Length: 309
Image (cartoon, rainbow, N blue to C red; front, side, top):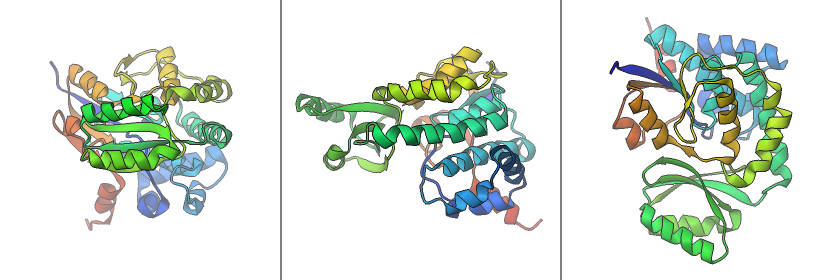
């Protein structure tokens, strides 16, 4: 089988101006994308992002999108990237929709801003007691025993993501978060971060309907020009309907990175460019074990920009 290359736009982690602002100011690819973004939105993204103190604000989300696409631009122009397959787990699917040719860049920027506001308004009065917690190195049999006991006690949970063996995202009532963290520690695991608002759980079907009616359903979405891998189950996205379904599934279905990895392997992918300000997907075992990973992030780009010719 022919050896192929994939571009992966990572899911979003906590981000702020102090960590990526210098890249955005200095990098020519970022500056070009920011200029288009400012024109589309009618305000200065850098100014709004600088003033934001929320790791998941509207402006932080747009900045993450812009940086991911700009880094892919850099990978093509400076690194010779020629991707055959595209993937974007969680938030990364927005950049993937653009890169694969399903949506115009300006539309993706507008959609990202509108979805951020849609989610903010939804979680202002819905599921206000739910958080999504990420953790690693937990034996899954012991975790299931804990979750079964939680269910017997009348507790609620939902798996919001599976990134590798023993590496999960779990949505749970905020009142049980301390108990969950202690249980993870007792199992020999390590708690990473907690997301507020939460993500990727079946009980957010109301958010899915609201997003479809008020945002996504209003945009022109075309069939991708290259294969895209859906982050919920690793299926290939090849039609406009498939693309819209993937964008909507993100609200009420968990991400499954190992399933995406399996499809990438089946597709003949050997090299993977991960373009975005992240340090997660490139580090998990199922990624490092199966691919030659080329990381294109703001820190690496800045080293290039600041190195004398």
